[in-house]
View 1 (cartoon, helix red, strand yellow):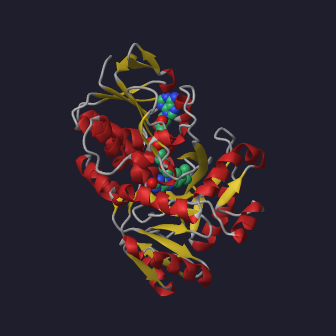
View 2: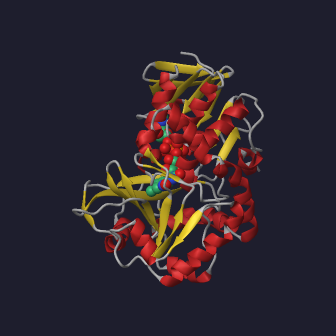
View 3: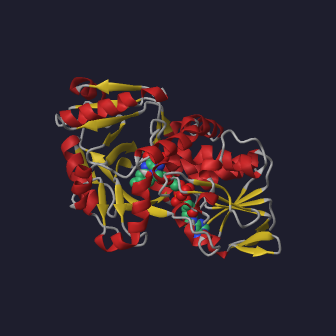
Length: 414
Ligand SMILES: Cc1cc2nc3c(=O)[nH]c(=O)nc-3n(C[C@H](O)[C@H](O)[C@H](O)COP(=O)(O)OP(=O)(O)OC[C@H]3O[C@@H](n4cnc5c(N)ncnc54)[C@H](O)[C@@H]3O)c2cc1C
């Protein structure tokens, strides 16, 4: 089989890239070892996070660092045996979280974040997936007055970005979420974001649109990628596929391809879990809620109420560890009347992260016809379509809607 562009990885990033290339007339074959949307894109919290204009930085305050040092926090956990290996990456992340580089990362990410909702909207409409998407924002919930006061100050500081939000006192919060317990003392309702009640289903719906428009999806192992003459070739269940161009959009597994090709890109994973619950009889969750102090999200999903955790630093392939999930569940139960879990084993996902808090989008510096689109960290669902557009514009030689320089892989070339 021959096509113009092979896209490797059918998560939200790969599927969106394939759609945008196809819209520009490219004959594209999309390849994944599993069904589309089976990786990290399956289990996230479903926020199309228009309000996250500042990237998720490493804490710099001594008090916070000391607290995390005890490894008892619900929002971040680490495996002691993994720390020595992760230390160089964490040090880079910490350095990049200083005020000046963080401001630079914020500037770099803004053009992508600003377009995230409209890029999803176009695909949602074309794929007729409107029933899966809610346009009522999400609520940050606080359990203490000092934490709420700090969050209000932080939100006010974001006013120059033009974000829409409402500060909720206890009564207003309980009017919006009547089943929250009295532990919730107030919140901030972010109004620009949208939420998805089945992120894996959304990715599969986008992939179905790609196929409906004439694209081909084939199962195969991206690790078989090789250069044959001046082209790229991959083995699939339907035989080898060859094309002059290939895109690596393998999310947390991208390193399995770029490392053997000689690229020293510092891609790490921040692991995170989800589990679903019934609500207790008569209770209903109306919005997606984020308990920032607990570092978890409670989201009404097609499968039940989904609790997603914050960050776990552990080797990508280490066995799942329920400690963090249990800490979050205990807090969540004090906040909302959760019933029984609806699944035995929790889902474990891996956020693909770079220490400078920007994805890698653009050409492989030393391999003609090879392109990268990975490393979307905490916001891959949010950024998939807009980053798919950007890479497709680059590959087809169009004027790009924003300067792609900040996302180039060459920033890691020594
Ligand atoms: C707990 C949690 C909550 C999150 N919440 C949010 C949120 O609310 N909003 C948000 O924007 N983001 C969120 N994220 C982040 C988001 O889920 C990811 O950034 C995003 O899904 C990454 O998409 P991707 O397409 O790059 O990777 P993936 O979805 O992982 O896709 C990679 C694909 O590559 C395939 N693959 C891997 N290896 C091979 C191989 N050898 N051969 C063939 N195929 C292969 C996989 O099967 C997979 O389909 C969350 C993440 C976690 C873990």
